[in-house]
Image 1 (cartoon, one colour):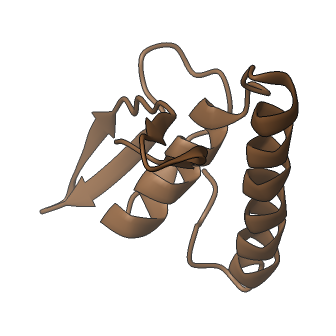
Image 2 (tube, one colour):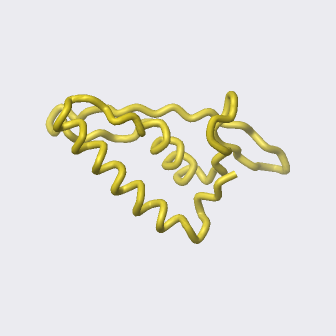
Length: 94
């Protein structure tokens, strides 16, 4: 499991900010997605919801929520939704 609240989270947040900008720039130049939306959505959803990310490519789940002594597996879906007023901007949808 990847702890989104670890000491590496600042580095990961910085890296994801650069990756998001790269994806936006790529989409503007090519009108095609670069293909990192799912990974970004998984990390952001886990961070915002306090989930622990699973190791990549787990069948059927992307993160785990621990509550009341139990683990709940969570599958995360994300997509780029262009803003009609600013088409080069996409927002995460979880």
